[in-house]
Image (cartoon, rainbow, N blue to C red; front, side, top):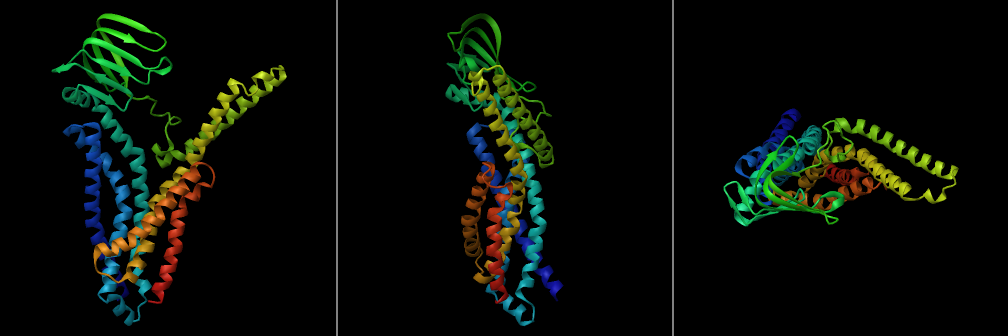
Length: 398
């Protein structure tokens, strides 16, 4: 009988989990695509290309909520309909009924870790790449309707009108023009095209004038090309400039070792510079511009090392939030004894939301600042575990 009972409870959990996961994932997909559609002005083809990249991002947030919802519905209904009391009357402990939920959550959590890793290392870069590759169409669409387009890549375009693909009297301002400051280009006419290989937007202009910082000015008659960089393109194998949150977990350990070596190299350079200044009696060079630059570089390098150490703990903690949500939600729903799905879910989810997420964010920020060890990101999971053990003790006395 216990094995049949276990299969029954597990089937009910999986049934509700599957339906709620599909519904919530589709809802998050629509919200994510809609946000990019409104924010970027994407066309239909770009929206279709976005879907596979947004899917793991959607699942990343849907897994914990749907896992909690499914166990709350099953155990709340069983308690309200007297099934828990019936099982107890047969000499079976109510704790045995919770075993399928724990097994389900234990299997789901590693899957959630993999999906979370996929979302940050493949999903988000993929979304950015789709938006980047669609920027030509976006720019033309906005310019035709508003005559002004401002991009998140650090440039803006203003035109008098758009005739087909021809821009009449375009004015382009590149705000990240480097040490020279903003660069402004005006022309009689121009045409935009995307260079995907070099990740630049090519503006072919006629009779242009370029103005930059430090009183720089140039008049270029005839036809010429003006390139607008869309990203800081780096080698695919150069991970040193990438944020730790963008790296797959399989590379975090290797990159952490390399970053530690870079830190030692900077410390060596700083020590050599200070020693040489002392040896040559140039005390003014100590803590001068060179030292300040190296110390600033060392500080940012150490911060990156701490983030590389924290990132694996963060992804595992987020993935295993599924287990701890179930660990708290299943016994709480059993004790609540209500068959109304949304009442049970609200009763379980709101306290979990209020307790877990602030603690998770607090632990993450403290770990990223180096104030607590990297495993400090598990603070929210630890508190949920303590609450879960208290609830399990109450279920034992059910």
